[in-house]
Amino acid sequence: MSWVVAEHGRVTRSDRSSRRGPTRAQLAALAPALALLLGLSWSPVAAAQPPQPRESPRWGSPYRVGIVADVSIGVALCQPGLIFRGRCGAQVPGVGLRLGGGWRFGPHWQLSGAWVRQAHRPGGAFVSGTHDGAVLAVRGIVPLARPDGRDTRLDLGFELGLGWSQRRLVVDGAPSQLQSSGLLVRPALILDGWILADYALGLEIAPHINLHWRYCIDADCEARPGDWVPAPFDGRWVDGLTVSLRLSGLMFPRW
Image (cartoon, rainbow, N blue to C red):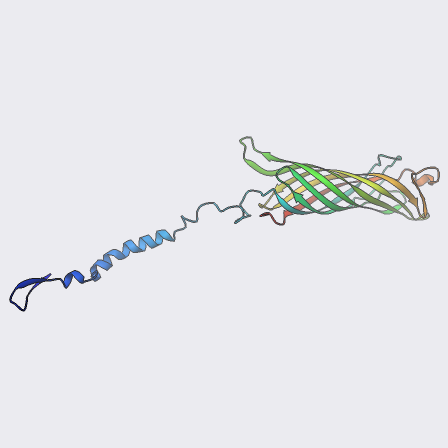
């Protein structure tokens, strides 16, 4: 602040200093405070909150709802038939496959459709065997919890599938093949573990129970086996049991 003499001789204060901005010294003193504020505003503390599952499927809780696709592959074993004295001989395990998709309504129910195949050798004069089917299945699911109530990310499910199947057994000689087709009942016990919020690895055990109404040896077909079936083959109408590893994923978990 300074004093000046006006043109009429009156002494007055000059307000020039009152209009000045901050000095360099003042700005230098404020710089550390401004830097601290900016650092706090960009600090990872604000991002340290756990992300939502839809933003981070890797660490989020399992969705357990949405459109689901699954594939399983494992071993197919010869299973003695429940009808017409089916029995198994010396065999080598074959391949069991399942490819399906469906809709999981929530934590406890899923409706799906699937193509299933078992490739196994029932033994004896048979050189190969295949069993193809298409099923519609409903699955009841129990999400498993720890004693304290926390989620284990494990789902235990029981599935019942009904559909159509065709069984074909190839013989080394004449007649050349046995074939049957009809109803397929496929119960399954499934254990899934969620490795991500929308992907699970699991284990599936599924017998195939054939309730067929058409049986053929080469071109000769009847509604059921009988005296027309040669003796070496009358007890070879076998079923299969699949033990497989499975991968399932929710394709649109945000729906």
